[in-house]
Image (cartoon, rainbow, N blue to C red; front, side, top):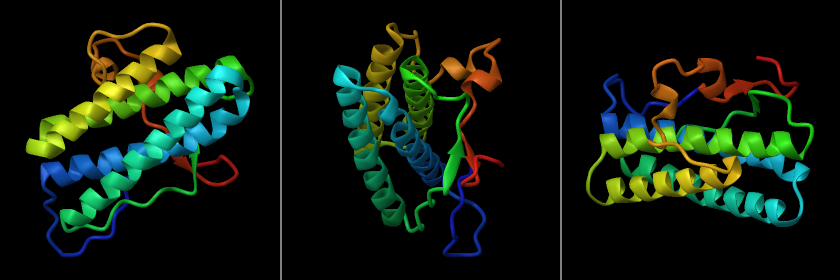
Length: 172
């Protein structure tokens, strides 16, 4: 996933905290997009859970954009569209996508927890916890270390890599 940003200075050395904030923001952009896609495939209780998650990711996205500005940087912009890891043509595929999105968000927040301290670390840990809980609900089970599963030995990178930026027609 692209973490485009417009630099305010010629200094190429981002702080680890700013880099992690921008990466988490980019992941939230992708999650908001993904929930927009999958939400139309779910109804009833799952549809309500998807709407709730969509709202939560929008709120986190907005908070991270404010954080990037507070750190002196323009927030990374959302891409026009994102290529999904698989086709989402029915409810079961939508549920699988929701679990994947939450796993990826958890990874971004695990990195942010490591890169920051104080109140920002507390907020990032809360976001990591929320993503892990949502992922477990969508999947019907949990993982030992939410946000770190994609880094496990033998993990299939295609199954756990980031949602990629794509053109509006779905091509790269």
